[in-house]
Amino acid sequence: MKLFVSNRLMAENIEFKKSFVNPLIIASALFSLVAIFINIELDFGHVLKIIPYISLFVFSMLFFLARTGRGLEFSKWALVLITVTITNFLWYYNFGTHGPVLYLFVVLFSYLIFMLDGKQFLFVSILLILNILILFYVEYNNPTVVGKYPSVYSRIIDVYFGVFLYLFIMYVLMSQAKRNYISEFLKARRADQLKSSFLANMSHEIRTPLNAIVGFSNILAEEQLSDEERKQYVSIINSSNESLLRLVNDILDVSMIESDQLKIETKGCELKKIMRELEDMYKLKLKSSGIQRIQVFNTSPDQNYIVKADCERLKQVLINLLDNAIKYTEEGRIEFGYELEKKDVVFYVKDTGIGIKQSHIDYLFDRFYKIEDDKKKLYRGTGIGLYLTKKIVHLLNGNIWVDSEFGKGSQFYFTVPKVGMEVAEVKDVVAKSTVEVEEIVPEEGDKLKILIVEDQMSNQEYYKAILKDSPYKLIHAMNGLEGVEAFKRNRDVSLILMDIKMPVMDGFEALKEIRKIDKKVTVFALTAHAMSTDKQVCLNAGFNDYFSKPLNKEVLLKEIARIQK
Image (cartoon, rainbow, N blue to C red; front, side):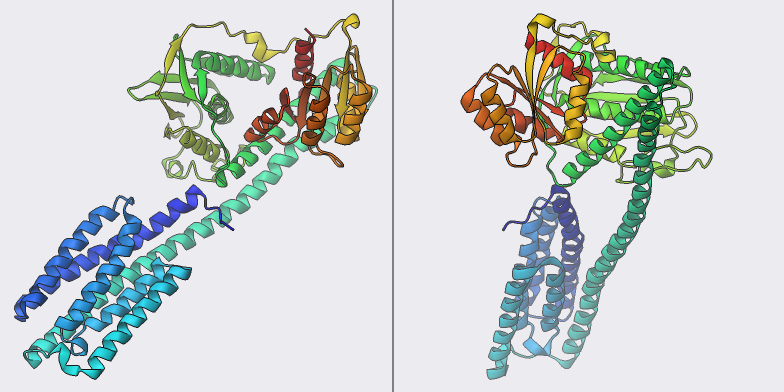
């Protein structure tokens, strides 16, 4: 069974290895440099003088190879093999157990403990032990093979200098290990604190809209309410639903990013259209919320540029930044748009809000990080919005950064590569389409027979309720098998609304059986699976369209009216 390792874990593993490999290569190079002078001073043989020069050259090459990270794995193993080889040469030419060379194996073994795991560590350790045993066997049976120091003086100097050099290398190794341990310990403690804060914020962010949904739903049951009050309460419930759904989607996206499952679907994105839609959406949002103190401006170029990117993810990033800007701006203006640079399209969202202290900027895009300086006002949020935004921008092959002055506002920037960018005609983007959806209902004479396949009775009742004023004949089935049988009995069904996860037979199996009977009937997938990849899975399976729950009434009616034509 293969273990899945995320890109983030791989990156962390590379950084961990670099933190040991690079310092030890430098220490080994310094060791070789000092050995050159010691061997010259003690007037050892030519071989002992040459070996440190070779070592210095090799370790210098390894350092330049390893510091970029690309040749790190090669450098790691090269350091082991070269050290073993040089140690064996030194053992022979540096008088075996009479000198300090054998202790180099102890240093090398300490290095192996940090750099190798599992079978790799076991295999190399066995080879190292066998190497030492062979050296022992050779010297034990023939002590004169390694020769002797030219004088007691040179032996004493060599051994003590060797000990100091080993102490230096062990200091480098252990201090780096200590530094890594303390760093990871502090990160873990901070992550634990942020996670606790996140869970507390999450509870608040879930309960707040739920409180409104449950509370106003109960109030709507009261008969003495006026029409105006009912409309107001329904509007609050819808707003709370959107808030809760956005939170759930963000959590799912973070989960997918953490497991490297979030896929980017690259296609041509009309920037003019996206910007105009966002401008209309936020102007309406501010107006419906009664916020008159903030103005939203789209300051993009007039040309309709088309860039290759994931349009939905691009909009998601802009929406996250615009929502943040509105949250932290009491009054003034919010400006958003994009500019063209040499290699990138640079998007921006600027506000005249409270700004960000410099001490927070370094952590602003960290997971679960949330600024809570102002005790007089509670700013809602979970601390995953900007983390998610940064990750999506990186998936789009861009970068994100912020400039801010506390008390004067913030400017968020992110880039998308210009590769394949085109200029197209400016098409009219009907503002009405982003503000309100025209409800088109077919006439009485053009009735559609709709089969609803859904195992939850509450959802069945919901679909019945939203279609009750429309001249559609509804047929209900509680699972996929019942849905197939119902379709066999009602071949004049024009539309099937199919849930995916059901008992007895799921939506995918039911679709296969229905396609065997009729390949042209329109089947919509209605599912609680709302991740970005789920839509493509449903379309690939043969569904005509995909809608995630909770279902928007206007969107469904519009699609039904479309197939009616």
